Image (cartoon, rainbow, N blue to C red; front, side):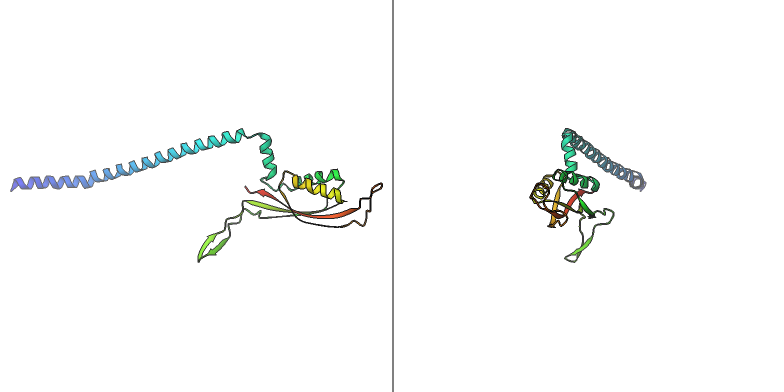
Amino acid sequence: MMRFVIPAILIGISFTLFFVFTNPMYTSVGLQQAQLRSYNEALDNSKKLENKRDLLTAKANSIDRNDLMNLGKLLPNNIDNIRLILEIGQIALPYGMVLKDVKYSSTDVDTSKPAALGIQGGVVAKTPSKEYGIWDLEFSTVGSYDNFLNFTKDLENNLRIVDISSISFASDVNSGPSAGTSAASYTYNFKIKTYWLKN
């Protein structure tokens, strides 16, 4: 009888030791191994991101400085309204055309507002906000028709993206043909749009 009791007690002690000490330690080791794998994956991803960053930095450094400046002028990262008005004034200057009655306003410039929500098929969906802002500019100028055509062509060829929304014109009652010329002057009212990247 005694020889059956002692093995039973030893077996009971073994099970107790397994469940009280060995099993929790085994579980802990398994969790630590999973955590170690997670850290190793994060480290690998970090190295990949660093390599990608280094490649992008090398690419950015290889771009010609003048090209970067031209890109910034083509689509700036701020409205830069004063500079644009001055640029347009410089374009008009060789044709003796002066900007008057300058008015401007901006749209899609509030990056602090959350994206608008819409309902599609009974599901609420976020409408992505635009990554650029639109700047509207109005001005008038006076000049001959030939000068107007040349000015418009130069404006379209300017590096900064400019869309002409509308042009209206009327006879300039204050100025007839210039002395020594037969070219009549007209008043031109421009409405244009330009764009800028949001940060």
